[in-house]
Length: 307
Ligand SMILES: [Zn+2]
Ligand SMILES: [Zn+2]
Image 1 (cartoon, helix red, strand yellow):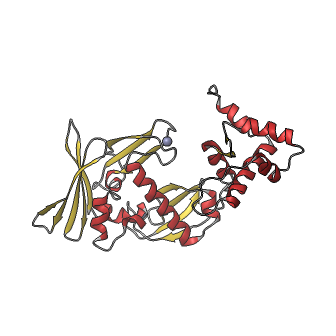
Image 2: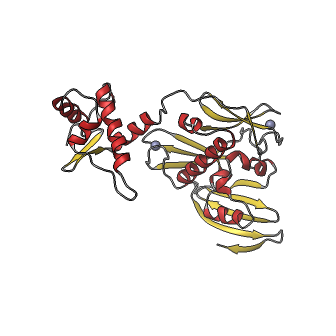
Image 3: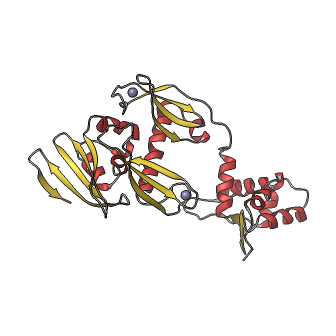
């Protein structure tokens, strides 16, 4: 077991052209060798030597030794990428360290959560995908986006990719997993009385990753949209919520059809109601925003169907 090294030591290992080309070469060679269904290919020393522009085998041997343990794994069959090697080589190959190309403003569907107008525009701002309302000039949403995401798409397909990423992230966050690093998230529900959001939802779920220090915030109503009870409820009404962007739910909160409220304290409990037409699905949450129970309500008569 090697001793714990500092982050500077780890990055210093990469400050060398030959080592970066070794990592690239391993990724390229694996890509060429791996058939469908095969695991990660392990490369023999001679195979790595074939792919890398290095003066002699002793130099290659030295650099491979430096990378092994951190960026490469070595078995009797050869070399392959470690977890850190995977992350760094994909980062290098996708050129996600470059500045993203600009895009927009591009009109997008949906309603402004603040003023109710259908005047939303997407653009890139401070390297974030951002939606602004041109009527009230407020920012409606901001989502992280990668340079490769922008480089390989345009227009509608770019907007679709943002929706997909945010829906996938929201599903992991709801189940307590950090989409960034995979660690456990702890969640809290907090009241935000001064929230600019409509009164229908003034509760926010804050999920914190104590490993990578990422924090994710979501209105309580949106945090349950991808719960199976909500997915099924909407699916039966012709709506696939998993294909919707967060900003496409604003209309429901703006009109007060989606609401949240605190129903008990110590221990705290919350209720979210997602209404569609005369029907609704109610989700009951605990203080960590975990859904404890759901029920369907049909019509205004309050006929219940528990699930
Ligand atoms: Zn507006
Ligand atoms: Zn994390």
